[in-house]
Length: 418
Image 1 (tube, rainbow, N blue to C red):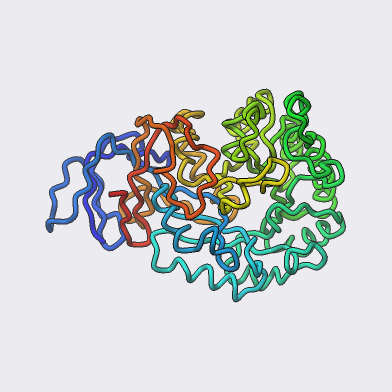
Image 2 (image 1 turned 90 degrees about the vertical axis):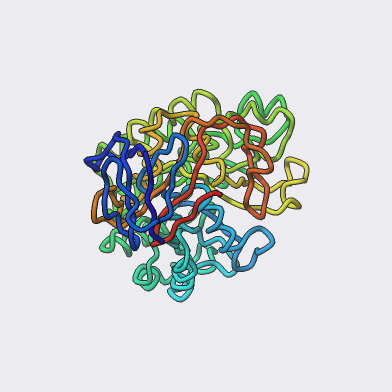
């Protein structure tokens, strides 16, 4: 669809129009003009919204959907809708479905599922067959069909030789191998951060070293094999230090953290509310401070919503028995914008693409329109009415956030939150 965007402030460091208020003319999915006071050439749809800001389209690499196998939690159609309404023009889909995403045909199915959407799907293939952590899946075939990385979501690789083989096997195709940083033996079925809070609440804790020992092991393997290693969802200050040192050595390593691990600490669990039961667990404020600093200096490459829809029966249980997980797409921008300056927020929401060799477009004349439209100044309390996902398990319910999304323009389509 064609459109004329009026009086928009562009936030794109690669664009000559960065920080300027301009009009943008989009025709046939291409930015055909950027200047002040563009006249509407053909009675096109005009987009004129309060305090309108525009950046290159946002990307969240760690999104779960229930399809196939768990459609009661969510489906691809709803996931694309939620992503669009939340400002994301591209998402990475985790393989934790039933069956898991482990074949090239399944990668191709997911890619095709978004062909008529304003949101592009970039599938993550399972590292091992059936995500059972015994035998490597068809990695090359999935890569050739469009997989951007390989991992078994939050199942830690217990066998170090499996990680060694995966890194060696994929060394020449430079595709990230995900290794979830958790030592099962040390975590020992813990349900929250091991701390004074866990002692007071009488809940079994997951100590920091359960994460850090796994990262230390994985870095040593990477030093030996080479390859491309991605550590998802780090949560402790020492994890930051380990990865910072590995990067200084020149290792090809990247990492992410979750928005909720930057926003809440383990004191939030006082009332045993299972919406705060996430993995990795909420840590201490000192951990949060280190994580935020690491996001700012680039040690942490990506912040993710870790959008993981779960039906109510899996969360409305005693804390020990409830599932780990929260949805997060709808609240992602508003939460991130409460923590970081706006220019940092936009950088965080766009820089993850380079880890997965996804083109990051710029706002310039002649470029494909891949745009997110938003107002960064609106303050509001996120509640049930703001949840668009089929599952409602949001950690951010009743939380004050800042910034709203107006919509996206991508793949030749306009999706506005009207």
